[in-house]
Image (spheres, rainbow, N blue to C red):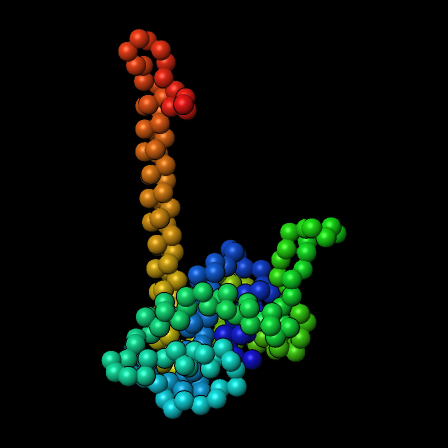
Length: 222
């Protein structure tokens, strides 16, 4: 199992402090893939630029897809751009791969066959391996999970420097990208709320206007 697959497993298995957003998880999965590529020496970092190494079979189709997606000519891609580009819909890609590999199945809540559908992990050695890594507080996996709101206990989650400077650079970029995505969500929420208030004000103003003749005008009247 790769770090990215372990992260997806933990995201499906754990009960996070807050629900894990698909966008957040996708960004973190892209970071996990980059960590795996660094570990396999398929890439290196020149400060924040991703420098590809020789192409080889990484024994994981999702990781092979990540390696194939690398920019292999200068100017190389920086870590942040990689996260946003590779991370697009990546959580959905992992869900599909897990279903195809028999690691994830569709279940139904309750006893009725038409209950709300949900996804469940199958009890496999791969799942138990990810759980074991999680229980052992592996720092890089812990940092990637913490970025999307999944934490073990109340202790610090910042011991990921043990992965080296390149891994620390990736983890910092993941955190920054997730925070940026959250800022975008909040800004859109504020803009939508402001638009809704203006719209209600306009509707209210029209609804209560009295046209010549004294008849009350309703905006909903044809």
